[in-house]
Image 1 (cartoon, rainbow, N blue to C red):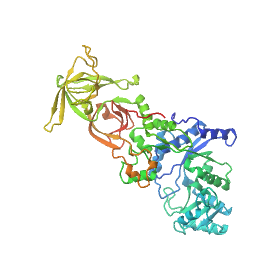
Image 2 (cartoon, rainbow, N blue to C red):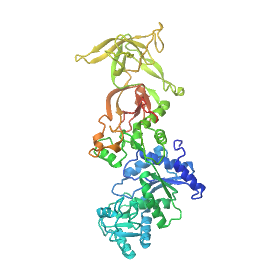
Image 3 (cartoon, rainbow, N blue to C red):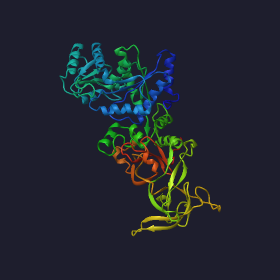
Image 4 (cartoon, helix red, strand yellow):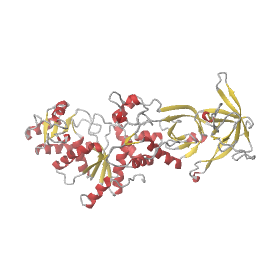
Length: 552
């Protein structure tokens, strides 16, 4: 897929040096998501980096589910992750794997580390371990059980594996250095007891390896050459290398880190996204306001626009937060070229053309996409009764208002020039309809007498228009940087109450009745829209026409 491309960056420089120096003769990358939630746009950055790097160097790209925490994992997430990768065009060329595939090997290597004197069984509780760990300025204290004999550790670890101890009673810890300036090297736990059924392994195991221990083993066994991950793992790299070195892998994978993708007006926390879903504050993981890949797909974004956004955001090591308007700009730029135009009246008001025959229908030809003449034209029906958008009418017009107004002329897009003669109201004073006369000599042309018509508005035949609800989506939060929420506040305090507006009884061009999810249209003078994949007959706004993004 052409969108699987990244410009040269510091990760490529590392790889090219390794190839030149003979550190490796191939490139093999991986994407290791936890199956405990849905992928989001931050995941798209990791996917693009790993998949495009493998493609650039004619290497392989693995998908490996990090399913080492059975209490939070589910097959629903396993399936959604693969679906998202396929949709993005980043199918794994090196195969699909599971961390749980390596549980036996992880256990064997744990026994090896115990025999080498590099691991021990510890009885400290989680709170006690935290207390013993020390701080950034003070060294940790050694566990009272740090110097157990190899024989005792082997026996206790076997009994842990056999389920003799309750959750949290014991851990297996790497024996490294309790005085290390890197807290991650202060005898980290590498196995814990969890009596929970695993989504793939069932009840075979009641001990599970921790990520920092399991991940380098998985990389090494799969032949991964470059394990590229987000910056929060930089301080974990010495532990990654310790595991690889002390197990004695001949071919050593190399971990390198990049800054994660942070975006304004959104949040990437799976925990919080799950809360929104479970509390039904949103319409599922694919609610179009969320940053999940399935939500962006449902809203109408394309893989090309998502990867274009990631590319423009850049690959670096420094923290930054990217304006969500850039994402809107990317899809808007694409759809301006590719989306066919259709007419939709979102807030309809009836218009009667008084001098037009009651039973006549004629068709006006309009362009499918002025940006692309090859897209051709289509015919739109015109009848005596029409709909226009309420915003295109003013009973008391402001200065320089060139749309429909009393005694004013306006062009009906692609059709006649009309003049408003009468405003009909009901008993409550609400406008029921507008009555106009058409200059039937104008058609789609200019007036013969040379008068200038400054305004053009869109319209639909009342007889042929299709009714549909339309969803207008906006930012999920009212605060730009959700990382700067005050300590006495939560994400909930900044949820945008206007993040979605549902419009009923919108009037759409009849051809839209056959539109399918995944098709994208520009509603003339309104924005870009797509049929909703979850609620048939509903249209979602992808993005407005107005581009407020200003390049930095």
